[in-house]
Every structure is written in structure tokens, then in C-alpha cells.
Image (cartoon, rainbow, N blue to C red; front, side):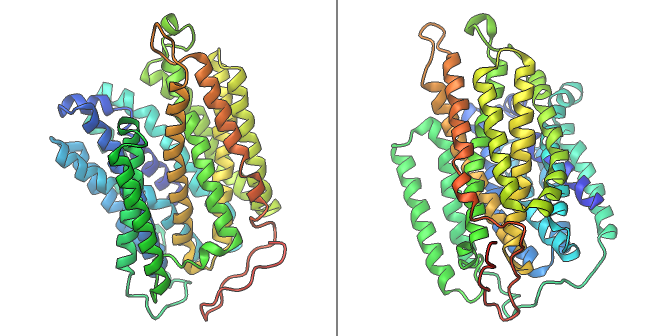
Length: 471
């Protein structure tokens, strides 16, 4: 667990270092704004598309093997990104590096092979450090680029990942997988994987383009049509596949579909503060009449306490899940998230207001809810479906976050100053209020999540058992 926690920190940091240094990359590679935005889009697209596939491979062949393979792919991608001298090479590096987005479900599959009775706590020991790593990557990358070069922004966490990959090979013992063998184990559902990749890729790419193209543009409507067609074909293929990429029967289980829906809405609610707070902090106070005129490094410092808090909240949330069940923890976390956002709606005129709001909403609320949602999903499925089920929750949260960014952008554009052309203070308040409402919307669905009574595992025959009463 110590090795996995450290690896989660390093990979989380590596996945977020391109964001603060995007202007520097744009300058050094002579990129247009649209080309620079494509870099972060590529990383998210890669993670969303490959996440379910890598998770399925972890379920079939063991988490240890897949985790080691993924770490070296991430190292290769980050190394290419560090020395890329053109957009094409950088996109290759970001595509490979983006596979690291799906490392959490693979880690969960690995953990469940060794941990059974304390699975919720183990999930928190992985998710907490990963969240902290994302904050660390945002905070350190800017000053590191200023002190050295953009290459070391990629190389430093890459070296850490590489060292941990070597250590993991010896720290994680070779052990016969506890996952039941399947007759179709050696055959991955490639048609299903391809169709799911098309549907998810079209959707995520479309959501990244909508700020420039608009919701009703020809490009946007075409990509939405591709998404719907790909999803429909994927469902048809999965229903007939002997070894589907994602067993659709899993999605009918209360603990799975409820967790996936809540994860999607939570992703949207958490994306709003992640988008609005940096904008608020960077707002030139002498022009707009509010804001803090913060630099990129200062913005990162304001954000980091919340991510650091989430590192400790993750394991604590896992322990709370053991004591009270996922249902109670998620419901409480959603209320806390909404409270932090409502605080920002009313109080946002001083730096400590921003820090407190972020700690409450993101560090405590989102941090606890994320761990509890993964724990609920994992508790609702057989060990052989741990990775793929948690990857579905991860993808849902990513899609929700993409919609959350669009909600944030719409909130800021709802009211602008006619003279400065900058968003008004009321537009930020409107965005925070919308996010608070989003955070509490899933409370009705939380009732369908597992309580303290664990859901039974699927028997060896492959038939899904009936839900446990009260679960």
C-alpha cells in the first residue's frame, strides 16, 4: 500500500503538470491557442478512451501485471513530451501519458487481489494520494519551469514514477490472482472496445470544442450524432458478446448505477469550483473591482491546501465507509460540498474565504465522496469486475466534469461588464450557486447505494446474485 500510495502521488502530479506550463509550451513549440488547447484535450481523451480497456485487462490478467505495464507506458509518454520539438510529437507523448488517468481502477483491481475485509480503507489510501498528487503537480510545475526548463517539469515526476515502477516489481509479490478464471479470458472484446472508444472519444472531443464551436453548430451536432450511434452500436454488441468489455448486467445493479450517476453529477459540481476559483483569483481587482490579481504560482498556492486536505480525507473516508456504509458517507459529503460552495457564493472577498471554501467543498466534500463512490461500486460487484466497474464510475465523473466546465463558462458569460468586458461578480456567485444545487441533486439517488451490509459476490457460475435486502 505504501508503494501504491507513492505511485499515486507521482502519477497524479505527472498527469497535471502540462496545465500550468501550457503558455510556455505554446511559446516554445510556436502553437496557436487552439493547438495548445488540443494538448490537454488529448490527455483527457486518451484517459477516457483507454480507461475501461486497461481496467478490463487488469480484471482478466491481474492488477500487478497491468499496473507495471501502464507505469512504463506513462514513463515513455512523459519522456516523449519532455523532449518533443513539434506538436505531432507532443501529441504522441500526451496520448501515452494520458493512459495514466486510468491507473486508479487498475490499482483497485490489484488491491482487491490482496485486501478483502478492509477494501474501503485501501481505496482511500490510493485515491487520497492521487488527488494530492494532482494538486502537487499544479503547484510545483510553474516554479519548476521558471527555475529550470519545461523539460524538467515532465522529467522529474517521470523519474519518480520510473523508480517506483522498479520498486513495485519487487514490493508487490507475485501471487496467483484471486479472480476466478474464465473460459473467454484470453479474448478481449475488441469490437466492444472500439465502439466504446468511438462513442467516448466523440463525446469528450465535442465537449472540449463546444466553447469555440457552440452547442448547435454543424460540428457539434455531428459529433453528438456519432456519440449516440456509437453508444447504440456498443450496447447492441455488448448484449451479444460472450465476453463483453462491460457486462451490461452490472449496470443494472443498484450499487453500480446509483454510484455512476452520483459520480457524474459530482464531477460536474466539482468542475465548477475548479474552473471558477482560478478565474476569480486571477481577476484584476483594479479593473474589475473584485478579485485578487493573482499570478499563476499564487493561484496554485491557493488551491493546494484543498488537495492536501483530500489526501488525508481519502483514507478517513474509507474508514468511515467501513463504519457507516457508502450511502451515509456520500450523502454527508454532498452536503458538505454544497456548504462550501454556498460559502463561496456569499463570502469571496478575502483570500482566506477562497481557501476555506476550497478546503470544505473540494478537500472535505469531493475528497470524501470520491473515495466512498469507488468503494460503493467495488462493493457491488464480484472481484473479477473490480477494475472495469470502477472505470465506469471514473468515466462518468470525467464526462460530468466536462459538462461542469461548460456550465462554468455559461455562468461567467451570463453577465459581463459593458465597459471592461470582464465577468461580473454576480456571474461568479451564480456559478457557485449552480454548483451547490448540482451537489445536492443526487441525494435522492444515494438511497440506492450500499449501506453497511455488503453486497454478495457473484458465484462461480457467473450468474449475478439477487441484491441483499437493505443493501
